[in-house]
Image 1 (cartoon, helix red, strand yellow):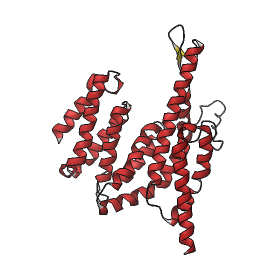
Image 2 (cartoon, one colour):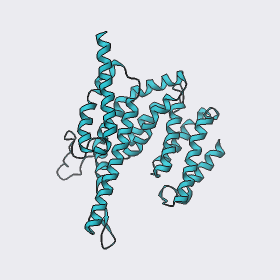
Image 3 (tube, one colour):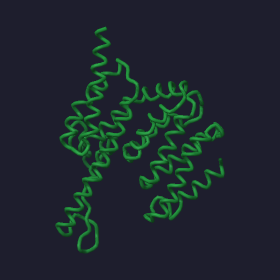
Length: 291
């Protein structure tokens, strides 16, 4: 196993690591990320419990380096699979609860990576054998409220949340630190910001109208891609088994998604699925109460 980890790490450093734009180097990096995923999938039983934390920290550190989706997706899959497979009874860090907590800590500064990991976690738990799966479901259910709150912040258009205004700076002092929600909104705003190259070769909002239009379109595409990943994550967490007692957490989703549909029509099919799921849960609960 150690030899495989070493080969995978070498592949991921190909071409200078995450910063490379060379397609051949990225293919090698993809191979390295796939080694991590397949070794965890097929040979997890050979991994000593004492190594759980080290492998988990390695994967988490690699994901924080902003590899392209071709590479980050199998890395996120490997990390979420590792967390799902670590027994809930172990004292070693890195299980489902630990991974969710660390993703939420990462979320204010790197929300896209947090969404990517959290989207895969329910599916990985579902693929376990019955007893570990029930333990995993318990951990996911315990974390669900916090995860959904994070996703809701991600789905809030910049400037639309008047409940978390920026705090004014004290007279003669520095501004207080931003809240997690404000940091996420800042990231979303930066995704949508058009960046063009002016006639002098620098980056900015200048340049020809055609360049400005292309930059604005690219900003919208980045924004839609982010929202799409947030909707995917919400769908994955809504697919978890839901009890009647959880209904109140879902009642707020339908109106939120209806507003979001009007703002971001590219996501309409997935949002419609979310609304439909929320209504199904409400109907099932009503039927159970009437029995």
